[in-house]
Length: 352
Image (tube, rainbow, N blue to C red; front, top):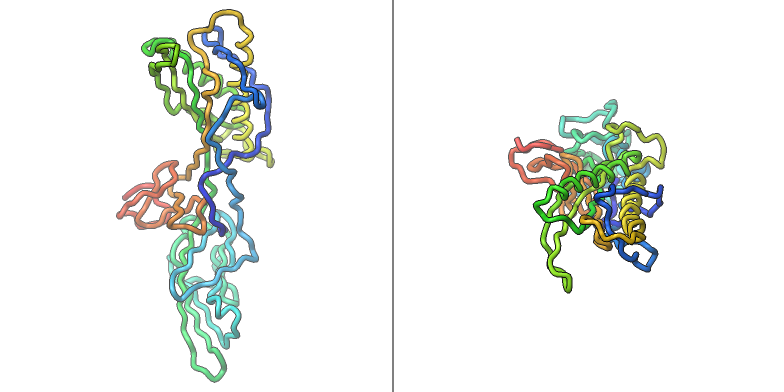
């Protein structure tokens, strides 16, 4: 259950260096080496953000009360048990009710206590055992009770909008700059392919994958150095879904955040070694080489199709990927549900 507000920005997990990352780009593509930065011997990496909070916040003891003024939003993690959704207001929760009668209605009609997925307790609480996105929607409780034995029956109607939510998936996006051959040279293309192969091999055992986002060659005027050709290389490293990977996770160390943290460390170390190893050369610099200090990184969130992050719509679950409401959809791994008047279901992946 998501209950706290927070920022979408986040800091990567604590670093756990893994392996030496000693990978060479090959004789014809060796980067040049310049002096390492003094602080910690690491190339600067910028634009870090905060570690995502734990999202498994559902607690069996957590209870949610309704309101007579507005529908109450309830967030339940996909495939998890929900908190107790009470058929009372905060005021009535601490008041004696004589002969109370509770009746719940959901998106598919009346709910009964024998329902295996959405149970109604004897005290009128609604509990979902294993929540699915198709169970998202408006749930209404009709309460009848007497304040005292002598008073007439009162009726109350409480509405809840129950949303499925998931943890965001995320990836690291790296940018690095290389001194390059002339921008129309085939050597630049060969270099890009080779570098991607090496980086992909570096993180393969961690069930992570490298994807090229873009690679552009530009002519840059340098102070006191004239014009030079530079490759602006942008790539991402993401965790492969465990159900799709060749090595399913079987223990805590296999969590996506831990594997990505290790992959990040290996990539950083790889670029540091490009500076370390080749800095010892007495030979002239090769035509294509990494420009020290240009490696930067950002942490990017993404949601599964049919889910999105919306702090304004879901202030109580600002970091959650919440199922898209009717009237919106998300067709791909983005973070926003897009408007679609044709969408009439929760979790729409297409606008139709």
